[in-house]
Length: 192
Image (cartoon, rainbow, N blue to C red; front, side, top):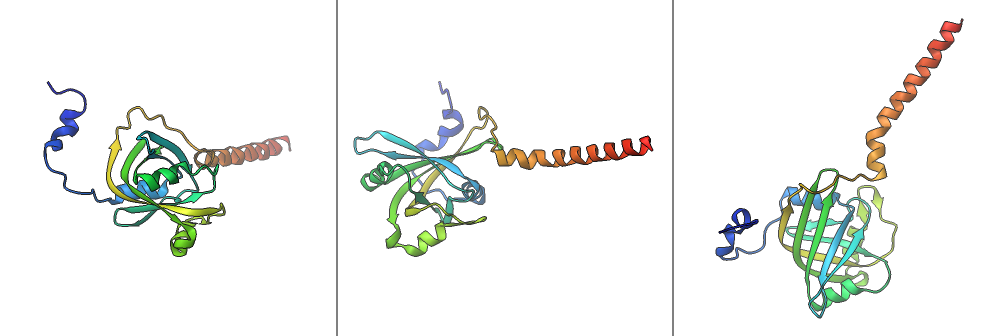
């Protein structure tokens, strides 16, 4: 008896691996509009290690084909993820777009590139739609994506940043302000 997700997703498991999946516009869109993700690496003893990464919208870049990258911002200076990648290049990224209730898992092999080894790459990764990223970055993480999976969105609770709330609410606040001014103007006219 087949149970769980095998009937829906497991049918292709008997066929040979056809090689890396190609990123489509849908995946690239999700990647390049993200401002946060979780990066999973593998420790030398085989354990998963997960770290939160964030930056301005677009800090994750599509570098062409199935290659993505991001600047590795200065953090707690432990270099655990970088060390893990040097030992075992296998990584996974988990991205969530909470307002749209979308989740994307990316699987691939990463490399850590020091800033002095590829200044052109570092320069490219420092630019997002809003301009140049001010946070210091001494290296980049580049990932050759081999596979991806869109997760079920059923249990994902929509969450919004303060900026996203302002964008949605500000027109109503402006309209309330206009109506309040109109009321005051009408009150003044009644008193005359």
